[in-house]
Amino acid sequence: MASSLLLLLALSPAYLQRLPLTTALIYLGVGVALGPLGFGLLAVDMRQSAPWLEHLTEIAVIVSLSMIGIGLFLIVSIVERLLLPWYYESREVESEGLELEPEEIR
Image (tube, rainbow, N blue to C red; front, side, top):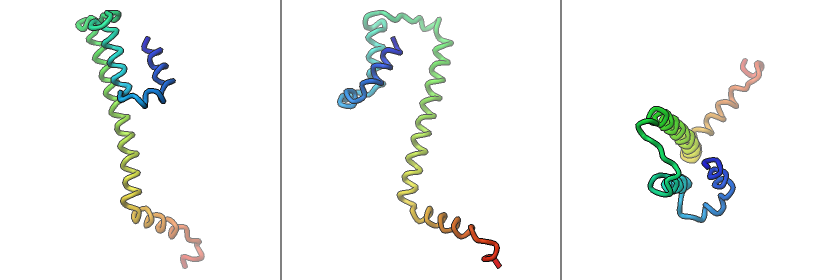
């Protein structure tokens, strides 16, 4: 079921972009509809499933933080290039100056 929902969301990005919903909200809605509050197709005993749910949430947090870190790194590098062009120009000049032939050093 989860893989079919993932496939559906992956194949319909143009339609989903027009909706005022995020994919996380769609997943949450499907989970509520399938769970005990909805149709009751998913019944999870929290006391019995606590160990693997704990590991699952730890993995989700690690993946989320990694994705946020990658996104922040890209944003910071773009902002640096826009706000500090003199820094990158001076580095290019320095690297060009280091490429001297041995005859020019004397």
